[in-house]
Length: 454
Ligand code: SF4
Image (cartoon, rainbow, N blue to C red; front, side, top):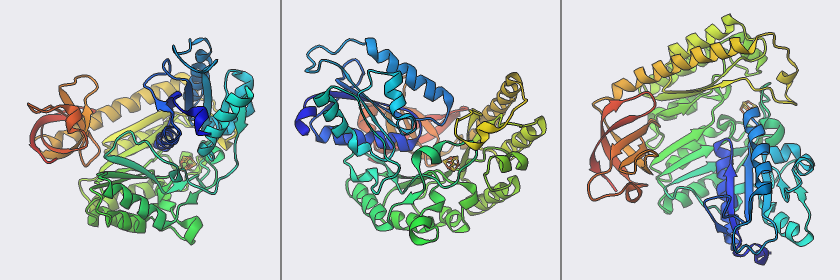
């Protein structure tokens, strides 16, 4: 097996959420273990694998377009292959299966969300037989964490604690492509976290579609607060998690923001809408009042907690009144970051059958109004950080300027600062520096480095 991939070059293209990014790290680790060599571009690659997302139509269309464009791309000089191998995996693989090969005949391998580990065998068989291989499973008994990983950042790790989702929000395709929720045994989670800490990882992010319901399938009741306690006890420096469903966020988990040393004061808590009527139609199973009560409890425990959220504008049947309820909630909560989306109809979900009389230009106008609000509030909420000195975990150089470092403060905000003399941004990556904040912009903070902590 290893010989068929040995010395082939590969490039991964990843769409969508952190779970997909984590899956890509596993796929890269697996291919490298078999002797394949990662390269930075599609042009240099013998094997191109797409890890896909079908949550929104735009990403879906882009995937088909991008894969189609590979057909005419010249092979890299010196390749041992007669044709570039193209694999499509993840959510679109799971959903579209053979259709991918019918519409894109140059695709060689299709795999789903439950069998990342099959990719090497599929590629080997495609080389051997000279025809496309499709393998998609309905469920899996194992977690991708059992595969080797090539982490993008040595100092940070994503750690899936659940896969799949049982919530069936009416607009969402995820439960249909990721399957039912499955939790990983607590001792496996802790062992993996401890391994990361022992290897020098400073930040661990626990992942799941709804981390708050962790353990319900395995232990009969959610045990996410215990996961937080146990991972904190490994000695990790920074602990984060995503994503939280408001209906399952317990007082126990909220309380941990006040007691656990490593748990960062930042929480992504998707609200989706501020209208109870729309929340019910979305099958979110909480009200705006309940959501606001969670925000109140979080701020009572940790007054400086930074909140972020997701909002869908233009869900079928949304009226101006519904939209204003969302607008008021966003204004009232005061989020450091809001991810705004226009509703994207996904075939196969209950919401896809709902009629919507609202003209697209009305939805667009609401969306624009909301974006203006989000920008104004983000700018306002960043001002209190002026004059503070924050510990920043450096990620590397800022995208625009190699002489400026970029990293994250405990609140999850991006912080920029000129690289101190005699240092490089790359050299400081993975270390913590103190930054005295003297600029508070809409999307980032900036200042001067006052101390290096290594
Ligand atoms: S909680 Fe809802 S939105 Fe999130 S993945 Fe599950 S079904 Fe989709």
